[in-house]
Each structure stands twice: as C-alpha cells, then as structure tokens.
Image 1 (cartoon, rainbow, N blue to C red):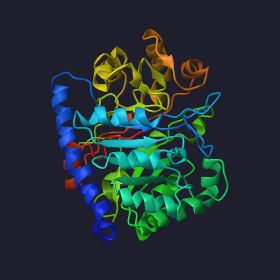
Image 2: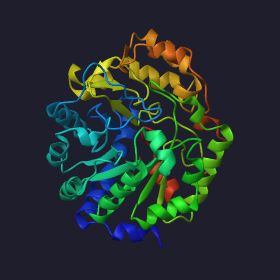
Image 3: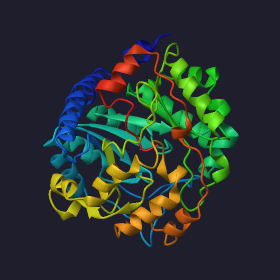
Image 4: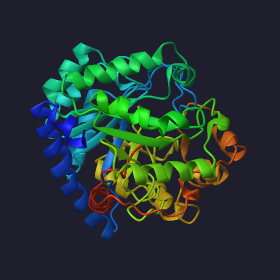
Length: 392
C-alpha cells in the first residue's frame, strides 16, 4: 500500500480544501513570508493559537497550567487574529489548548473562515462521531491526534485510564468520516521503541492515517519529568529513522526540527511561527511562556512590528543554539525575559526560578547533519512551510 491509498479514501471536499487552502495558499503564504523576511518585517508565516487552557487530561510535561479560573479567547478575538493574518497571506492556523474541543465556539470559528485551513491539536478523547461529522461538513480542518504510547504507557503519560483505546477509537472515527487525519507522538524514553517500529506505522496506516508528526519530548510545566528526555544517541536514532522512513513507509513522516540538509533550526527563531495563548499574549512558541505583547494592543501586523521582545528573540537565539533553548539553556531564557521585563504567562509563579535551576537536556540541536533523502520532502522543506512549523 502507498501513501496515496489513504488520500483516496478521504472525503472529496476535505481533499479539495487540503489541496487548495493548505497546499496552494500555504505555498503562496510562505513565499510572502520569505519576501517579508528579506525586507526585515516581522509577521510570521503562520500562527498557533491556544483557544483555551481547559483540558480533560493531565499529561506529563504539559506546559499548560490553569490559573485561578479558566482562560479562553473569545470568538471576536479569534476572528480578529485570523482576519488580520489573511491580509498578509497567512491562511493556516494551528489550534491548540488545553484541549481545543472543550472550546464551545470552535465550530463557529471554522465555519467563519472557509478560506482558511486549521490543524486541530487534540488528545482525541472528545472526538466523537458527532464532532467528526461537523468537521467533515466544514472540510477545512485536519485533526492531529496525540498518541503517546501503548495501553500502559499512554495512561501514565496522559494521567487517565484507557487512553490508548480511546485515542485509537478517535483515529478510526476521524478516518471513517473521510477526514485528512494525522497522528502526533512526543517521543520520549517510555515510548521510543513503539514510536520507531514498523508495527506502529502499519497500525496507523491500516486505520487510514495520512501523516505522522514526530516531536521530541520537552520537559516543561509543573512536573517536567526530566527523566523522560531523550539522550543524544536516541535523538540521532530518531533522525535516522525519519530520513530512512520517508523513502519507504506508506505514511507521511513529519518533523519540525531539521531542514532539507539536516541543519537544526527553531521555527520561532526563524520567525516562521509564533504562539498566541488563551489570554491573547503573543509568545515566541507555546513552551516559552513569556510575553511583552497582546493581540488587543492593536492591528496584529503593527503589534508584531513593534515587538522588540520577538525581534530580539529572533536575533539572539541563534547565537545560543540551533536547537531548543528551553532544553539546552533554560537559564539564558530566564535572563532574556528579565532583561525585557517580559510578563510570565505560564500561571506558575516560580517559572523563572524553575528555568534558572532547571536541568539541561539534549535537543535536536545535538544531532549531526543528516540530509533528507526523499526528494519530495527536500523540496517541501525548502519551498513550503510543510514540516517546518509546530509546537513540538
């Protein structure tokens, strides 16, 4: 079976929206971003938006900490973000939480912007047949369903019961409705053997999954669980698996860490993507929970252009690492935030102390350069944002 086989099983409207809104408009939007970058402008190619911090699970290493009460972006604020972004050729948005399916106006958001494409980051436990049928109607959403381990590991990682079977059921529900369905796995010590196995790939492909997004586990949040972080040898093993697997597996394998020639990079440092949290604060990425700017400060383009915090982050981060600063030099991040008088947007009063005293672990920046062998993937890495941006 080939990659094409699962595409052909998808709903035709979903395929069309994927090809046009995500593919054609995404390529055009990325080209506009490149031109802006050459002019020294500061608006990202696409954005990730956490619509709420509500969630029905309690995962290890999750960066989301709720405050005294739940936070959510109101629909008018979301519409403003998207409308402002479309003015600059940005039609792709990652929708995060918490668990975004707990946000009551989610379908209204998708229906209001049929010319956009949304990637829905979900744990899958709320992805019912009714919800999936609604997603099929709007046709401009790809669910990216997190699957963090087998029957035993998933329950531990997710802090709940029977999570593996509930997640697999969500995958089957999504693909049976013809959605362009992806699966995400945050690779850590407890699930690496499953993640890098032929059996895992075949299990997903047989259920209609089109793409599989690999993240490297990043210790953060109230309980970082540093012991789950990958070693340099394990990161190298993951990289080799991805490069080799793209040449023969019947599923699209995606990462957000390495360029076409194997060079490590940070999407936020490149200005490709940034994150807007449930309070409207603009952060470099979801796990870097400091901000000096808010979407309510004015037109979104003007807010980005006036953000010395984002600009300085982009200019200074690559002097520190091409990998993940949170993992490799958390103390520098705390110092950088303090120098810019940035607000702590994590709801954790001890964030700066945690970063200053935090463990240093290896990120993708430790990996030697291994160029992509798959020609299509090399082209996508060079000419489109495909595979370049994510929160992982």
